[in-house]
Image 1 (cartoon, rainbow, N blue to C red):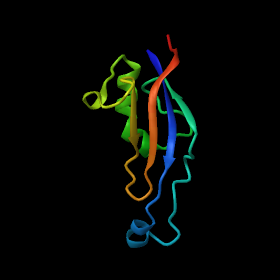
Image 2: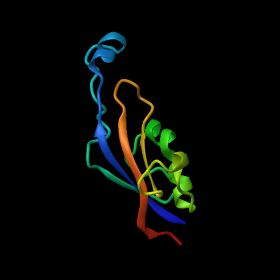
Image 3: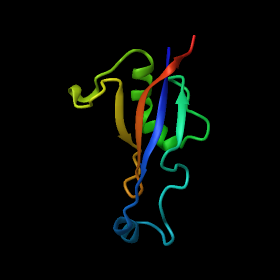
Image 4: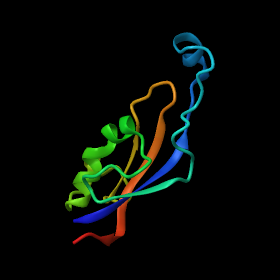
Length: 105
């Protein structure tokens, strides 16, 4: 099984949505910061990774680790990558999911 690297590309925040729908003081995600990297063995959530974000990307991580590729009918330049986000509509975090060089036996 191949290992998969998860890199935080962006930590976004929509203040207009937060003002309208969230409690006062709500801000950007505090779990992840731009540039953070995690390695997954394909089925296990990396330590320190947000549970909800993991639920949003785990199928792609699992697929890559087991040899799958070419998500979304080939719109990615590298068929072994995917750009994904967590499911938080007010403060979504954007991730790059890609094969890592190392493999797990």
